[in-house]
Image (cartoon, rainbow, N blue to C red; front, top):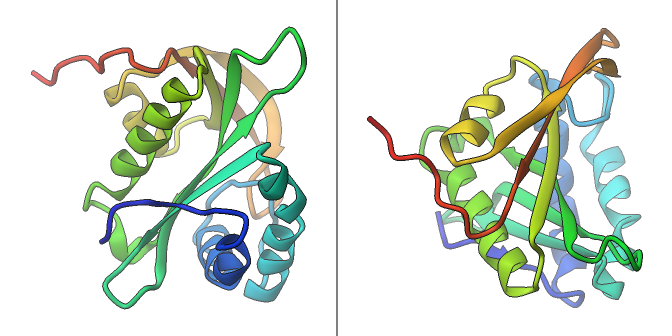
Amino acid sequence: MTAPVRLTPDQFPSHVEGLGKLLAHIVEGGGSLGFLSGLTAAGAADWWRARTPAVESGDLVVWVALDEAGRCVGTVSLGLNHWPNGRHRAEVLKLMVHGSARGQGVARTLLATLERAAAEAGVSLLVLDTETGCPAETLYRKTGWEEAGVIPDYASDPAGVLRPTTLFYKRPGAQAPSAH
């Protein structure tokens, strides 16, 4: 895998198809990302394409991880908050890693890249949510994220079953607990 690439507004359109394939792959594998089973790569690419204005305005920052063939095997996005009382915080969105690239540190690298960029942008608080009990919870805990709470029946999984969601937060620059 190459180092994560922060997509500029000019680069973003050329990655929409790859991002769509990745999103459809994750949803088909049961990933709870706000979509139901049956999401096609074309439909997922359309969803990403609709994010173009947010990327162009700087409200959404997207990173991709590419394999040696240039295929998108991972992504994460940072949603910036421009409300006067919320400019200090941002949301981590759509952290995804293709099944073929799992266990290789892709998610950790993407998350660390996002956290550094957020800190450099003056963000002092990051938030995210994930399906309670999913493998991502372990990643977030191991990388220093703190649980804020659980909301029951927050979103449905791809099969349409309501699932609880765990909310996490982190202050960029905070050290992850050491592994013992």
